[in-house]
Amino acid sequence: MLEKNIQDILNAGIGLFKVGEQNFQTAIQAVTKTFEELKSKGASDNSEAAQKIREVLDNTIKGLNDVSSKAQENFNTLMAEAQKNYSQLTEQLKTVVGEERIRDVNVRFDELAAFIKDKAGQVSASANTFASQVGSSVQGAVSSASAKKPAAGGSPKV
Image (cartoon, rainbow, N blue to C red; front, top):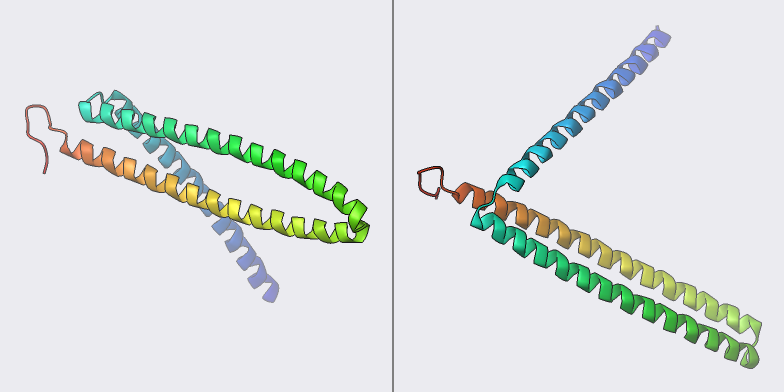
Protein backbone atom coordinates (compact mmCIF):
# COMPACT_ATOMS: atom_id res chain seq x y z
CA MET A 1 0.00 0.00 0.00
CA LEU A 2 2.73 2.48 1.01
CA GLU A 3 4.84 1.52 -2.00
CA LYS A 4 1.88 2.17 -4.32
CA ASN A 5 1.33 5.62 -2.76
CA ILE A 6 5.01 6.45 -3.18
CA GLN A 7 4.90 5.23 -6.79
CA ASP A 8 1.75 7.34 -7.43
CA ILE A 9 3.41 10.43 -5.96
CA LEU A 10 6.52 9.82 -8.05
CA ASN A 11 4.43 9.40 -11.22
CA ALA A 12 2.47 12.56 -10.43
CA GLY A 13 5.76 14.45 -9.97
CA ILE A 14 7.05 13.18 -13.30
CA GLY A 15 3.77 14.16 -14.97
CA LEU A 16 3.93 17.62 -13.38
CA PHE A 17 7.48 18.05 -14.63
CA LYS A 18 6.48 17.02 -18.18
CA VAL A 19 3.49 19.38 -18.23
CA GLY A 20 5.65 22.20 -16.88
CA GLU A 21 8.28 21.53 -19.52
CA GLN A 22 5.66 21.55 -22.28
CA ASN A 23 4.10 24.77 -20.95
CA PHE A 24 7.53 26.38 -20.76
CA GLN A 25 8.30 25.45 -24.38
CA THR A 26 4.90 26.78 -25.49
CA ALA A 27 5.52 30.04 -23.62
CA ILE A 28 8.97 30.42 -25.21
CA GLN A 29 7.47 29.88 -28.66
CA ALA A 30 4.71 32.43 -27.96
CA VAL A 31 7.19 35.02 -26.75
CA THR A 32 9.43 34.43 -29.77
CA LYS A 33 6.48 34.73 -32.15
CA THR A 34 5.24 37.93 -30.48
CA PHE A 35 8.74 39.42 -30.54
CA GLU A 36 9.09 38.67 -34.26
CA GLU A 37 5.67 40.20 -34.98
CA LEU A 38 6.52 43.34 -32.99
CA LYS A 39 9.92 43.56 -34.66
CA SER A 40 8.30 43.32 -38.08
CA LYS A 41 5.69 45.96 -37.25
CA GLY A 42 8.37 48.28 -35.90
CA ALA A 43 10.58 47.81 -38.94
CA SER A 44 7.71 48.63 -41.29
CA ASP A 45 6.78 51.82 -39.38
CA ASN A 46 8.44 54.70 -41.19
CA SER A 47 6.40 57.45 -39.56
CA GLU A 48 8.08 60.61 -38.34
CA ALA A 49 7.62 59.54 -34.71
CA ALA A 50 9.24 56.16 -35.37
CA GLN A 51 12.15 57.82 -37.16
CA LYS A 52 12.66 60.20 -34.22
CA ILE A 53 12.59 57.30 -31.77
CA ARG A 54 15.17 55.43 -33.85
CA GLU A 55 17.37 58.53 -34.04
CA VAL A 56 17.16 59.14 -30.28
CA LEU A 57 17.87 55.47 -29.60
CA ASP A 58 20.82 55.43 -32.01
CA ASN A 59 22.26 58.56 -30.37
CA THR A 60 21.72 57.11 -26.91
CA ILE A 61 23.42 53.84 -27.83
CA LYS A 62 26.32 55.72 -29.44
CA GLY A 63 26.69 57.86 -26.31
CA LEU A 64 26.59 54.83 -24.04
CA ASN A 65 29.17 53.04 -26.19
CA ASP A 66 31.44 56.10 -26.04
CA VAL A 67 31.09 56.31 -22.26
CA SER A 68 31.68 52.57 -21.94
CA SER A 69 34.81 52.75 -24.11
CA LYS A 70 36.21 55.66 -22.13
CA ALA A 71 35.40 53.92 -18.86
CA GLN A 72 37.18 50.78 -20.08
CA GLU A 73 40.20 52.81 -21.17
CA ASN A 74 40.31 54.58 -17.80
CA PHE A 75 39.93 51.28 -15.99
CA ASN A 76 42.76 49.71 -18.00
CA THR A 77 44.99 52.71 -17.28
CA LEU A 78 44.11 52.57 -13.60
CA MET A 79 44.81 48.84 -13.42
CA ALA A 80 48.17 49.22 -15.21
CA GLU A 81 49.16 52.03 -12.85
CA ALA A 82 48.00 50.06 -9.81
CA GLN A 83 50.01 47.02 -10.96
CA LYS A 84 53.09 49.17 -11.46
CA ASN A 85 52.67 50.80 -8.04
CA TYR A 86 52.06 47.42 -6.43
CA SER A 87 55.25 46.01 -7.94
CA GLN A 88 57.27 48.99 -6.77
CA LEU A 89 55.73 48.84 -3.31
CA THR A 90 56.41 45.12 -3.02
CA GLU A 91 60.06 45.55 -3.95
CA GLN A 92 60.48 48.38 -1.46
CA LEU A 93 58.69 46.45 1.27
CA LYS A 94 60.88 43.40 0.78
CA THR A 95 63.96 45.42 1.59
CA VAL A 96 62.38 47.29 4.50
CA VAL A 97 59.99 44.98 6.32
CA GLY A 98 60.51 41.41 5.16
CA GLU A 99 58.37 38.64 3.72
CA GLU A 100 55.88 38.31 6.61
CA ARG A 101 54.81 41.94 6.34
CA ILE A 102 54.48 41.50 2.61
CA ARG A 103 52.02 38.66 3.22
CA ASP A 104 50.03 41.03 5.46
CA VAL A 105 50.03 43.65 2.71
CA ASN A 106 48.91 41.03 0.19
CA VAL A 107 46.00 40.15 2.46
CA ARG A 108 45.04 43.84 2.55
CA PHE A 109 45.29 44.05 -1.23
CA ASP A 110 43.06 40.98 -1.51
CA GLU A 111 40.53 42.71 0.73
CA LEU A 112 40.76 45.82 -1.44
CA ALA A 113 40.30 43.71 -4.58
CA ALA A 114 37.21 42.06 -3.07
CA PHE A 115 35.82 45.48 -2.18
CA ILE A 116 36.44 46.76 -5.72
CA LYS A 117 34.81 43.65 -7.21
CA ASP A 118 31.79 44.15 -4.95
CA LYS A 119 31.47 47.79 -5.99
CA ALA A 120 31.90 46.82 -9.64
CA GLY A 121 29.08 44.31 -9.22
CA GLN A 122 26.89 47.01 -7.71
CA VAL A 123 27.70 49.37 -10.60
CA SER A 124 26.95 46.58 -13.06
CA ALA A 125 23.62 45.87 -11.35
CA SER A 126 22.78 49.57 -11.45
CA ALA A 127 23.68 49.71 -15.14
CA ASN A 128 21.47 46.68 -15.84
CA THR A 129 18.60 48.28 -13.92
CA PHE A 130 19.09 51.49 -15.87
CA ALA A 131 19.17 49.61 -19.17
CA SER A 132 16.00 47.77 -18.21
CA GLN A 133 14.28 51.04 -17.31
CA VAL A 134 15.39 52.63 -20.57
CA GLY A 135 14.09 49.62 -22.47
CA SER A 136 10.75 49.86 -20.68
CA SER A 137 10.57 53.60 -21.33
CA VAL A 138 11.34 53.12 -25.02
CA GLN A 139 8.77 50.35 -25.25
CA GLY A 140 6.20 52.59 -23.54
CA ALA A 141 7.03 55.48 -25.87
CA VAL A 142 6.67 53.22 -28.90
CA SER A 143 3.33 51.93 -27.62
CA SER A 144 2.17 55.46 -26.88
CA ALA A 145 3.28 56.70 -30.29
CA SER A 146 1.51 53.78 -31.96
CA ALA A 147 -1.68 54.48 -30.02
CA LYS A 148 -1.62 58.15 -31.10
CA LYS A 149 -0.87 57.33 -34.73
CA PRO A 150 -3.93 58.31 -36.82
CA ALA A 151 -5.70 55.56 -38.66
CA ALA A 152 -6.10 55.95 -42.41
CA GLY A 153 -8.34 59.00 -42.78
CA GLY A 154 -8.94 59.21 -39.03
CA SER A 155 -7.75 61.41 -36.23
CA PRO A 156 -5.24 60.51 -33.54
CA LYS A 157 -6.46 58.52 -30.54
CA VAL A 158 -6.59 60.46 -27.31
